[in-house]
Length: 364
Ligand code: HEC
Ligand code: HEC
Ligand code: HEC
Ligand code: HEC
Image (cartoon, rainbow, N blue to C red; front, side, top):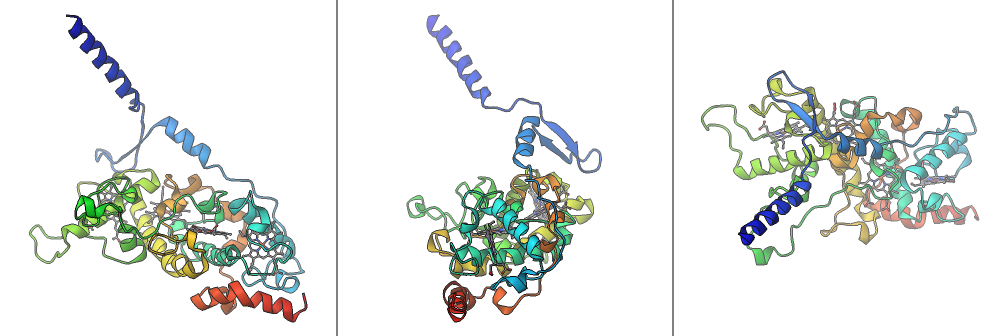
């Protein structure tokens, strides 16, 4: 008797403890597809409140006119922002400090006492970041619309954005656990599903085919393998996780491939994939020789961006706050001197001799 009573009490107590870990069924749903298709987004009000609080943007200081003197006439080593008035230039430097290095201040990117020097890698990286930001806002409106991005979209007051990725060699214990075939272990990139753990290298750096579903009822021309399909699903898990949505935000799940049954957001996402690839290939990966070793991945590659770098769990980064309208210089691609492009040679040259030579020549 007592034994039974005890077992019952323990199991009830255990049940209560276990259930305490569950979310109460108070999720709010938003319909985002045709009626009756079950295309709903579910969100806990508490989770949303926390996300809204984490996505507030810092206020911009008042805008300044583009009046002379211009930065290029006053400063010695300005390659991207030369056409700004000195007031505007200083305002942008202050904003960049707030967005990327609020604790460290100007000296995170500047050698003390010599603002023109390029002897610190963070400045060389920042110059390329300026160009990348301009490129996104000027050429990727199909994705970022009028909302655009600033350094804050990715950095949020951190030196290193919270969400970056490297090529993933997989868990170290692979030999012990047997052949994992690049998957079969919880993959952070795929929201901990046991899907391929290095899918971003394939789709957001490489341009492997994402489409896997055949157009005919019987197998005929579709040569996609199960492995390609698993890769696609891994990327889709990343995208859903990064935006804080489920698959029905973009797909009618009865016909994943069919664009006519998909939402407009799927088209935006398609441009997002192309854009992320472009940023990684043209801007972020080539910065590899500029970074110190402790910033590189296990395989020696540079840190890269994915959907989460900007989105950070929200369907529109910062809930669509349009910060860039306050910084028009970040919306046009500046014509730059060749030095503004970081090639591997330029990278080492920039970091060492150029600025020093110039200062010496000018007797500074
Ligand atoms: C996140 C990095 C970063 C921070 C922080 C930063 N700067 Fe800069 N700064 C740059 C970059 C990059 C350039 C070069 C811009 C170009 O080439 O168009 C630059 C150039 C300058 C120049 C021109 C120097 C010359 O003669 O060529 C001045 C002046 C300057 N910054 C002042 C400041 C001040 C003042 C602060 C702090 C309020 C600051 N910067 C914070 C990245 C930064
Ligand atoms: C699309 C997202 C994105 C935007 C926009 C962006 N960055 Fe970055 N930034 C990155 C990534 C990714 C890295 C690599 C992180 C690392 O260094 O480990 C990075 C690195 C840096 C670093 C090097 C930090 C370090 O300590 O190694 C600096 C400095 C920097 N960014 C400045 C800027 C500035 C200034 C802007 C705006 C003009 C900007 N970034 C805009 C994604 C972005
Ligand atoms: C933010 C929008 C978005 C979300 C969320 C999303 N997808 Fe996708 N999905 C896309 C886009 C865009 C493509 C097409 C990519 C291309 O063609 O380059 C695609 C392609 C696919 C394909 C391949 C279709 C074909 O033509 O062969 C499958 C399968 C798929 N998604 C499944 C999923 C699953 C499962 C989820 C949820 C885990 C999901 N997707 C979440 C946007 C999304
Ligand atoms: C450089 C920053 C950045 C990156 C990287 C990025 N996005 Fe976006 N994304 C944005 C901005 C900004 C918007 C808001 C555009 C607007 O307001 O019209 C947006 C909007 C979207 C939307 C529309 C949401 C809606 O509610 O209408 C989708 C879907 C989306 N992104 C998917 C993706 C996917 C998938 C990836 C990765 C493959 C990605 N994004 C990578 C900046 C980014």
